Amino acid sequence: MIKFLDLQKITQKNADEIKAAVNRVIDSGWYLLGSEVKEFEKNYSSFSKVDHTIGVANGLDALRLIFRAYIEMGIMQEGDEVIVPANTYIASILAITDNRLIPVLVEPDLTTYNIDSAKIEEAITPRTKAIMIVHLYGQCAYNEDIQQICNKYSLKLIEDNAQAQGATFNGKPTGSLGDASGTSFYPGKNLGAFGDAGAVTTNDTELSAVIRALANYGSNVKYVNNFVGLNSRLDELQAAVLSVKLKYLKEYTNFRKQIANRYLKEIKNSKIIIPSVNDQDGHVWHLFVIRTDDRSKLQEYLLNKGIQTLIHYPIPPHKQEAYKDLNHLSFPITEKIHNEVLSLPISPVMSNEEVGKVIEMINEY
Ligand SMILES: *Cc1c(COP(=O)(O)O)cnc(C)c1O
Image (tube, rainbow, N blue to C red; front, top):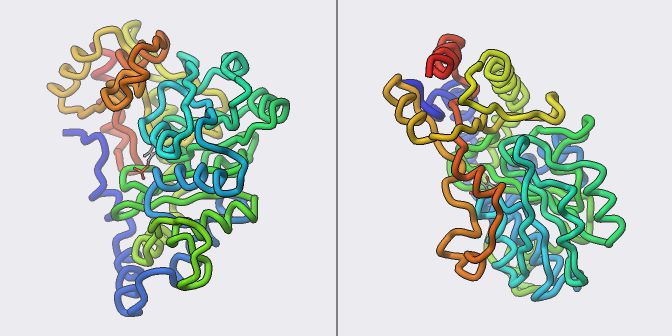
């Protein structure tokens, strides 16, 4: 069986170094708010070319803390609107609604799966305060048109960088393109921890201080609380693991790129639509997502050939029961994407033979 993602194999690649880091933390006797988190934050800031990284408990918290901080700073308030792609993972939307802000959904481009910047301006109202772009499947969603819209209407640009650590726009890393960015180190992400973990990156010093306090009970000085905060901290063990894995991220991303390049070149089947790439160097291929009319048939066929695939995602946020008040909305492109997408195996530990088999089986379909 060609697994969709073999985390055990990925961990094995650097197991000794990771175990040494974990043992160092265990032996230190210091498990929260210590030197490992500081070190990782420094490493991740230099990787992302930003001034500040704040390690938090998970990706959803990273995103919702950004909005919460803007509310604390008086920049946003309850009922304000945030533009967000309609085909994103539910967490992007949850980060908005958790803060009693209103998500305004905008259709993606059918070929890149990223927000269609030509459709953003018509969604802007006097209540719009921010655009959240999502670098979906590892491809950078930022472009100059989006930046110009933000400048024109004085909107904050927030990046959901959960799927795209290491992606770039003209050489600039995602996570450094907007006013603030939230990312996730969920185990299956390109940079994955051994459990939940996430981070905010920003060049905004005030925002970073507010987020750091909010994530630690609203406190910057122990037992002095400036905000009604929450507990969302990155722990020392995860930070130590992430510092090791960050060193190898570029190498792992190159494996993903090589696999993606083979898929792009060698998959030839009129029933299959391969994804389009804006800027090939900048895409980190968290997922390789194809489209096809009869998805379940293809998925079953591949499974019978020993190839595991997944669907990212089967139901768009506006059709979820959780968001009943959005259920009446219609986003034909988003709905088409959710009906047709299928994610092929791609990871730093797939062999050439395995990649070849996936291509051969798809071409024979
Ligand atoms: C994974 C993910 C998140 C949430 O990250 P968690 O760490 O699981 O909370 C947010 N947005 C997108 C696009 C994601 O893929």
